[in-house]
Image (cartoon, rainbow, N blue to C red):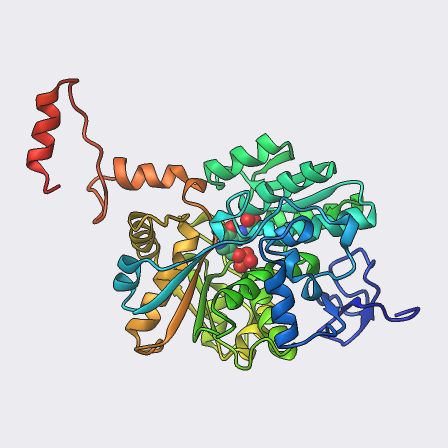
Amino acid sequence: MSGERRSTWQACPRCGGEVEISHPASACPDCGGLLDVEHRRPDPSGSELRELFAARRGGSGLDASGVWRFRELVLPEADSDVVTYPEGNTPLLVREPVARWAGIGELVLKHEGQNPTGSFKDRGMTVGITQARRRGARAVACASTGNTSASLAAYAALAGIPALVLVPRGQVAAGKLAQTLAYGAKTLLVRGDFDECFALARDASEKLNVYLLNSVNPFRIEGQKTIVLEMLEQLGWVPPDWIALPAGNLGNTSAFGKALREAREAGLISRLPRIAAVQAEGANPFARSYREGFERRYTIKAETTATAIRIGDPASHDRAVSAIRATDGVVIDVTDDEILEAKAVVDASGAGCEPASAASVAGARKLAGQGLIRKGERVVAVLTGHILKDPGILLRYHQEADPPPPRANRPIEIEPDLSAVEGVLRSSKT
Ligand code: F0G
């Protein structure tokens, strides 16, 4: 790396090389490994840092954001270039029926669906688009199963930068596609799956000079770390025993591992929770690899109704392996039926989430059933996306599926008279 080291730089965990923060590509120029953003350890540490973060809560400008409130650990130099909605500041929810169903007394839900575009992607995108602006990018691009594209489209609009998205045709939930179009991204419906979209987006970004904002982009990871930082803060910096999250392309699993490592290095916490990464059974290359001690990396043809995580060749495999190893974590898979049942329970509790999000709750239940999550352990399950992201699956589950699934809430068609309403009330227990 030339010149004097700044407060932030990029490093390759594979070969140990370092490059300037302005280096445009996501991969190491020497060995091709994915780059990480690294920061000089902030001057304040431990309790001072905790106080600084707390004092900013409810503030204005950068402090209004649940990402930039933690800027010492995100991108300390950004300042006037920051593009923020603002985002983050999502709640931790206690929902008794969900905890009971999962068999975990101490289960809380971190609801990332309450971000501005309805998913956790906004936390990474505010940092990614900020970096795009700092670099003077002429356009930004991503491949997506729908949430990244919705977020990219919104933040690119906010920054006034043209956006290009590549999505698998027919495989994106209605809410996400609608958002992407409405926020104004140039949207390509690719006749292929997510993995093909991603390969194409990578190629296009290299050859056509557009800035790639998939989660291989290390600035996205920096923003997504704040899911964990904010959660720890909400828990009074007393870490839970487990953090469960859905896993697809593995950017978020990597971000969680990095956040926990850095939080410990900065003296914010003194022990690490275990990460439980949960995949859909039909899209489980990481779970397969975990079962073999990560000796092999799998690439599969993915299939699941949880379209957000319908990914067969996760780009951040290597750094997610580090996250699981560093936290004594586990990787499991759950069936689509288990995901849909978990979703029905989360929805009926009033919290609500999209299908992929419910994998975290289904996975936590499975781990408790296996005795791996022990009685009395505290678990945070991350709900990654909003209930309205995928209205199609809700209507199929509740209104159309025949026979109705166990928790279907069938609507009842009636004639417009009072006796019909009365009849319904009498025949139901309510
Ligand atoms: N949950 C939701 C709602 C998602 O949209 C995604 C990923 C994940 C979980 C998994 O996160 O990929 O970091 O392991 N969605 C990406 C997208 C792929 O294009 O929106 P991951």
